[in-house]
Image 1: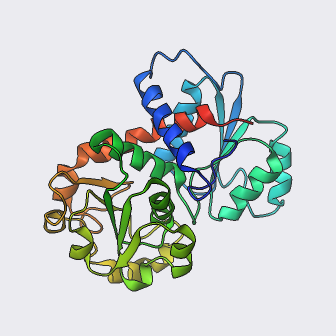
Image 2: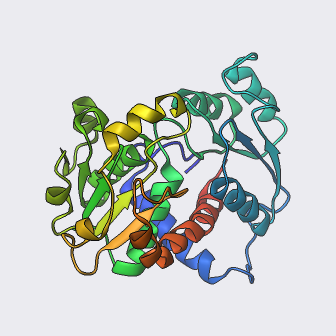
Length: 298
């Protein structure tokens, strides 16, 4: 695996190898024998702000023996000014790998093509592969294999997080239900391309019935702030709460990729009663990303 650009491009075997490696590196934290990034310098190129992604990648690279430089939107701007392919060709001669968090998926893919160094998608408007790999790892850590299980996503079903869940469903053999207003459901073209058992509905209770995982994300993603009022108006009611959770399986997990806005996509009581899972999920970003960094090769 040279790059990690999307869940769509990953095979089931590659995903399972990431999960098994994450289990090992999590157990070995603090006493690593192998430091595969020793002598390497990695660039974190972030056009979008971040807490968990930046911290987990910086810590992970250092724990694997590497050094890291952080470049924000004021330092380097993908897609503005110098062509991305030129930026990529310069950086490819100086650093050993890049972790990119930006807007356009094409920018990350073009950077990977022209830099000729390992490139990791740390979030684009199209996909959030590291997050979904972490989510599935966390589910399996707590409830066993996800194959054959039911995952219900509640909220904006057309943003990067559910899109990555859509591609994962076909590869790993679980059912995905998306509960969202019609305007916030993924396109039929995307669903056809992904395949697998994915359904969309405006009926929350129907979507949650018998679910093994209830999952949500913010209603207003980065870059959508100008739509905030309209999004909140349309998505109000698409919330994980005790009433919805009662429809799921008794052992169902609740996850949120954070930051969480209590009273909107999830109520405070449900969030706090499932905080242990949610913050295990947040911690696991570190372990899964260390696994990806360990497996990726130039």
